Image (cartoon, one colour):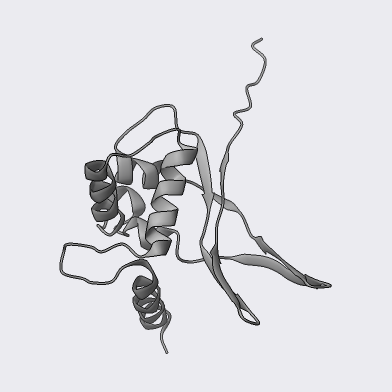
Length: 147
């Protein structure tokens, strides 16, 4: 299967995790709700119902700043750096964080204070446990001393 066909097929499967319909009136799944509310919380925002609905619609809308991808696609391509089993605990490491400003701007509008980074989302099933893992963190700007 060609890479572009494989990616399109994977995104179609992932989209079913994120939304319940494709009619333009997106119905958020629990994953979408958890992700958008988590992003808003970490960015120091609380969303009104209207803002939440707008964020859900923006989450599924392709955006020029994301190379034509919708935000859900941007965070649905996880790169796993390791997975290890330690007794009854599984540790999973994502390969890196991405600059979340384009995604947050697409969801909530521009804000110059965002220096938030986000991991990609990974779906994990282990035994009878199933979850989606992701995290947010703040990038700490490094300033060089002035000469």
